[in-house]
Length: 497
Image (cartoon, rainbow, N blue to C red; front, side, top):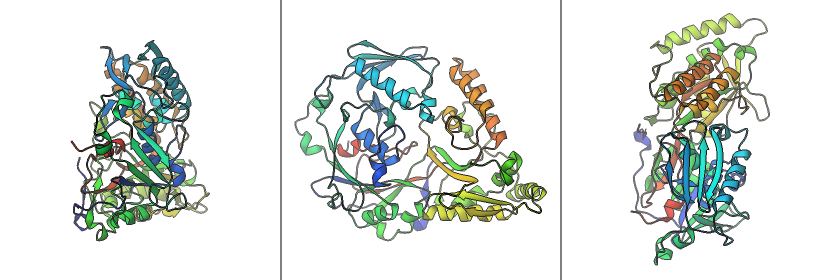
C-alpha cells in the first residue's frame, strides 16, 4: 500500500538544516507536555517514543518497524513455537549492577501484571511462565504459538527500569532542549546515545563524533508545523487525521521539507458509546455505517492511497479471508442510503428525534471529518451534533495503531474488559478459545466467528486505516515510513548507512 498527497500538497525535499545547533537532531512530537513524560503502562504516543529511547526491553523496533536485539542479544524459538529462549547481553544497569536474568524475569512479570485490563495485557495472555535458566538466559513459555510474540515484547510499555532509569540505548535529561527552557513553548528533553561498550557492544572510538544528540519537544500540531517551516526542527512526529490539514494547508512555507505518510495499520472509525435511542438497535447502527461514502470522505483531505474498510478486521488480516472488502455486496452508495433511510424513518416519529452526538478531539481534521459525516447522515434523515466536553456522546472517534497484524489485535480492542464502548462477551469468549488453541486452522476459524459476532452486534463503525504523517527534513537519515507508524528516536542519532 502506498499513500500519496494529491498535487496541491506535494512538498519538495530540502537540503536545509535546522537551527537546533551543536549537531543535534531537532524533533517536535505532536502532543502535550504532560503526555511526553507519562509513566506507567498507558502511554501517549510521545511518551512511547521517550520510553523506547531510554528503557529497552528484551527486544526493540528499528526504523523500519522490524524487531531487533535490545537487552537480549539473541534468541531461539522452539519448533513448536511455545518457548522463546533469550540470551542477555553482557551489560549493566545505570547504577553499575550487572543485568541478570532473575531481575529481567521479575521485571517482565511485574510489567505484564500491570498491563492487566489493557488491550496489550490481553494480547500477552498466552504467557504461561517466565523463568531464569542461568545468569544470562531467560525463557518465556507460551500456552499456544504466537507468531507476533516478539513484536509484542518490543512494545515501549515492556521496557525495563531500575532505580527510575532504563538501560538505554539513550540517556535523557529534561530542560532546555529547544533553547526555551521549562518556561518555553512545549516540554523539552535531550537524548544522548550511550556508548556501545556500556551496552555490551564493541567499543567505537569515534562514537562522540558520529552519535548525534536528539533535542525533543512536545508541541501542538500548528506550532510543530510552524517550527518545521521556520527551520527550527528537522522532524515532526505524531501527526494524525485530526491535524492533517495543519500540514497540507502550509504547503508554501513547507517547501523546504516533505510530508511522509505511513502505510499504517489499525483502526479509524467510530466506537458506539451508548446503546440508546436511535442507536439502541444494531440494524440502525448499521444504517449509519451504510450511509458513509468512505472514498468521498477521505477525498476531502486530499490524501491519495488511503484504504477504506467497512469491516472491523480487514480481510487481509486472515490467512484465508472468508469475506471480501465490500461488506454490502457491491451495492451503490445510493442503494445503501435508501435502505438506511428506511430504517431511520421506521424508528423516527413523535418524541423520537434522529440525532447522533459525536465526540471528536479538537483539530481541523476533526472538524472536516465531522462535516463529512454530517453530510452523509443527513441523506438518511439523521442530524449530527458534536458532543461538548463532558457531554455524553453516542459515538466517539477511535484512532489507534495496530501493534501487530493478527486478527487478535483488532478483536481485543473491543474486549469488554477494556471498557471502550459496546462489547460482546460471546466474541471475547471465542477470542480466548482461539488464543488457547495450538491448531492454526482452528484458531482462524474461531477468530472469524468472533469477528462475525462483533460485526452482527454493530459495536463499531469502521472508516478505514489510521492516518499518520510526519514532516521530515530532506537531509535527515534513518527515517522510514512503516506499517506500524512507530519511529524510534535512537536510529536518528546514528550515522546513515
